Every structure is written in structure tokens, then in C-alpha cells.
Amino acid sequence: MPVADLDLPIATPAGLKLTGVDHVEFYVGNAKQAAHYYRTAFGFAHTGYRGPETGVRDRVSYLLEQGQIRFVLTAPLRPEGELAEHVHRHGDGVKAIALAIEDPREWPEIPLYGDTVHRFVRPGETVRRFHPLPADPLAKPTGLRAIDHIVGNVGWGEMDRWVSFYRDILGFDLYQSFDDKDISTEYSALMSKVMANGNGRVKFPINEPATGRRRSQIEEFLDYYGGPGVQHIAMLTGDIVSTVTKLAAQGVEFLRVPAAYYDELSRRVGRIDEPLEELARLGILVDRDEEGYMLQIFTKPVEDRPTVFFEIIQRKGSRSFGKGNFKALFEAMEREQEKRGNL
Image 1: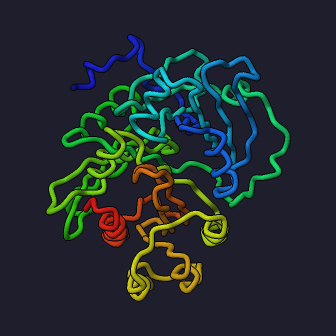
Image 2: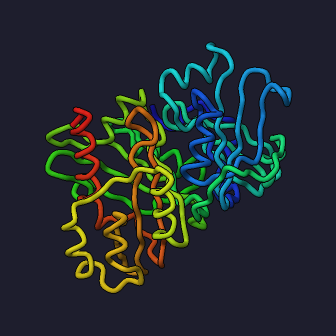
């Protein structure tokens, strides 16, 4: 379906001044339990609540915050309706990516890939919608600061359609692109294009499968999620060694690459500030471009279904997405697929 056929408002929000991602809303089966996980494992603080006690009758929502990151976890209180149907179809997953805008006008939600939507929010609007809570005694902060990018998985031949959506509807530009020569292993491949707004603060990579000998991680996601959706959220930290150490101690599980990856690391990326032995111990990956280097690591899926996961990233000048790590990373993902019998 071409972009022109999307069910969009007559006046689209192209050209709005976006200041970042305001929040990400997850639809989940049990928001209370999900909130407990993000508080104790990832270090988010529970700062707001909406539910029957505040006059909301059909759902409960928990507002979680760390640094500039806001997650809203929403669960249905009835077995019928759009929210319950979303959880039944997709499991726990991202429903809305809310963009912070400076424009004072009201904009509606607009549809994105699958059942995902973009929401437009003015500064402070999200927090005002929640009943505020006192300081969270359970949260264990881990140094997460902000959202760097959010990655969407779409079906075969759908990537360019959504590139056009971001370009024509939201005024984004192509930031970087990768084809199956960049992102492939012996067994599988994918293609990706990264769209970004004018100041580069808001970045959305879009992945689609590419032909390979076996099923790619994108195909596995599409099968288990029941269609296109948000694959992972990359969160920035100023000290990835400290953050990953805390996350691992609090129960977050990460993908691991073979030890041989670190034998070639210094030759491939040159001098870095972090101790190589610490990176190897934690499984942190490093890549360099012409502007600097970046460090990254990926969690295993955080749901029972092999769908949503997180990336922890620290940028030291680099604007890249770890192209030099793609092969090692996707081979690690394939090892997990093979354990599940899905490769």
C-alpha cells in the first residue's frame, strides 16, 4: 500500500520541530508485574499512575522514568477491546512512539507499521496525565540517559514504503542505509535504512528481511509478533561499563559474541579509553567511523516471545550503528534462534 493510501489526517505534521522521543508506550498483559521488572532490572523509577483509582475504568498505566527516558506500561482491565486484542496478538510490545514537539497545535495519532502509532506530545503533557507518586524506593538506577534510536521490523518489500512515509509525511531524511552485503551471515540477511529528523535527535532504523539460506531474525520476529512492530529500543549511557555491570547484576541477560572477537578488536578500531578486558568480560562491542567510536551491547529478548529487546549504547563521537559488529552480532542472534529451533 503506498503512503498516499494511509489513513492520515488531512493536515499532516510534516515540518514540526521535534525535540526527541517523549515516551514509548507498551501494551502488556500485566502492567504491575512489568513495571516491577523494569524498576528492579533496568533501574527505572515508578513516577506516575493511571487506573480505576484515578478515574480510568478500562486500563491501568504505569509511568516509568530514568534520565530523559519515559516508558508507559499499559494493561487492559477487560478481556475485550483494542488493548486486549493487541496483547493477545503480539504479546507485550510497543504500541506508541510519542514524539515531543514544540508546535502548540494538537495533532492526532498517525498509523505506523503494523499496529504501532506515532503520537505527538507537547512538553510536560505526558507527566500531567498521571497521578504523581513519591520517590520510588524500589528503583535501582543504572545510568541510562536517553533514547538513541528505535528500530522497526517490517515485512518483505516494505522498507522503502516506510522510508517514504518518514520522508513525505514527517519530513525526515535518509541518515544511513545498509544492504544484505553489510548485514549478512552464512545463513541469513536483512536490509536496513535509518531515517532521522533535521537535527538528528530522532532516528528510526527500518529493517526488512533479505534472501538467505535460512530464516532471518526479522522473519522470526514477524512470525512471533504477528506482523511488523518495534524490534528494539537503543538507550544511551555515559558509561557503558558501569551501566552493563549494574544491569547484569540485576538480572538483565545479554547476547555474547565469541572470545575471538576481542583478539582483533584493537587492530580493527584502534585506541579506545575502556579496558579491553572489561569489555570482553561484559561482552561489549566496539566500532569506529571517521568521527569517533561507539560501544554497544544487546539484551536477549525481554519477553517470552523472541520479539522485543534493548540495546545499550555509548557514543564517543561516532554517529554509526555498529556496522563493523553486524556479522558477530547477527551470528550471536542466530545461535539463540537455533536454540529455539527457529533458524
